[in-house]
Length: 129
Image (cartoon, rainbow, N blue to C red):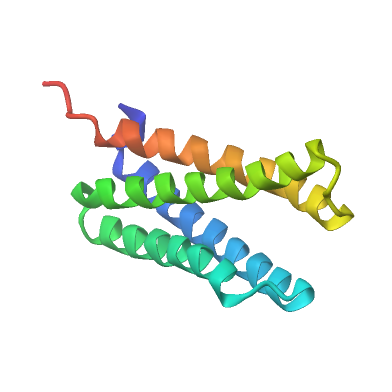
């Protein structure tokens, strides 16, 4: 299966590192620009640390893909929850323009993270003989 190919896995980990770097930079800028508290930033830092750790472990041993799968699952849940509360505020009319723009950005990060989560889930499936 293509997704269990070592070249694909290595490229996927590199992609994970790139997405993590972008996420870290954007989340840091958001925190600086809009004054997000450390409590709000902490789950994002945990997601980034999990993605980097999972990626490093997979590069060392591709059987560690389950750790990267968990990291992508956590990241997807984080993005979904961050999107959902903004969506709810748009629905009840209490959203700011920053909330609305952030909701659009989160929709794309949610899509990326669910696709990556599904890919890693597939990578975790036992190999057929």
